[in-house]
Length: 317
Ligand SMILES: Nc1ncnc2c1ncn2[C@@H]1O[C@H](COP(=O)(O)OP(=O)(O)OP(=O)(O)O)[C@@H](O)[C@H]1O
Ligand SMILES: [Mg+2]
Image (cartoon, rainbow, N blue to C red):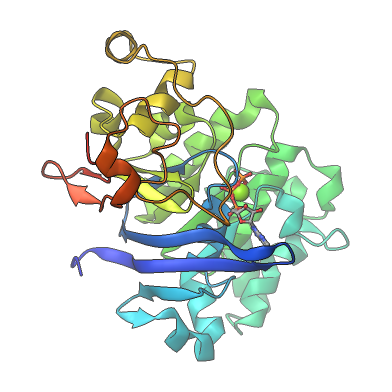
C-alpha cells in the first residue's frame, strides 16, 4: 500500500441480485488508491458503476467481494465504529436535498452532525457553524432559512458545509454539479478546488463531463462496465489518452484537443454498452473497440503501469 494512500481499493466487487437472472456486476474487480490531498475524478458512461463504487468506498454500500481499506483498516472493521468512520469519510449527493432535511433550518442542519458526535458546547457549536458558512461562502442570513428558501447552488454549499462539519479527510462527491444550473457549476467546482487546498482534503469527484474533471482534478480514473480501464494524472491523460475508450470519451467531449482529434478520427462508441449482467469475454470493451485484436476477445487485460504514473488495461494501447 502506498504510504500516502487515504483509501485503498482492492479487487472490489459490487454485484446486485436481479430478478431477470444473472446478477448485475456494477463494480467488477476495481483496484484503486485515493491519495491524501488529491482531487480524484471518476468518469465513464451512465451505468458503468461510478455510483456503486463511490457508495461502497463511502461505506454506504456493502461490497460483494474485495476490500476497501481506510487508514490501514478494512471497512468491515470500521463497521463497528460507524460513527468514527463517518467523521473521516463524507458523501455529497447529486441532489443536496438528499442530505438536508426539508424541515430543518440551515443552522439546525449544520449543527446536527456536531450534536450527534457530542462535540462542543452550544456556543462552540455556534462558532463552528459560522466557520463552516465562511468556508463555503454563505451569508449568515441563511441560517434561519429552510433549504427550499435557498437556491440550488446555496443548498449544495450547505450540504458541503454539513459534510465538512466534522473535519473529514475524504469527501466523495457523486455528480455534485449535475442538478445545478449550468451558470453556477463553475462556482461550486472552484469551491471544491479551494477546499481541497485549504483543508488538504481528498476529494473523489464523479462527473459525466470531462471538462469538469480537466479543470480541477489532479488525477482521473476512467470506468467502463464495472472496471477501471485507465488511471493517471489528469494532464497526462488528456494530453495522451492511451485506452481506446478514454480516447472515445475525449472525442465525444466538446473541448477536445485538436492533436487527439487528428490521431483518433475513427467513429468510436457506437451503440449502447453491453449489459453489466453478462459482460463480454476478455476485454469488456472489445465489442465496441475499433482496435480489437483476437487476444482481446479471450484474455482480460490487467491494469498495468505504462509509464511512471499512468495505468492502462488494454492489450493494444
Ligand atoms: N440497488 C441496485 N440494484 C440493482 N441494480 C443496481 C442497483 N444500483 C445500481 N444498479 C445497476 O448497476 C449498474 C451500475 O449502476 P451505477 O448507478 O453504479 O452506475 P453509474 O455509473 O453511477 O451511472 P450514472 O452515470 O447513470 O449515474 C447499472 O446497471 C445499474 O442499473
Ligand atoms: Mg451514478
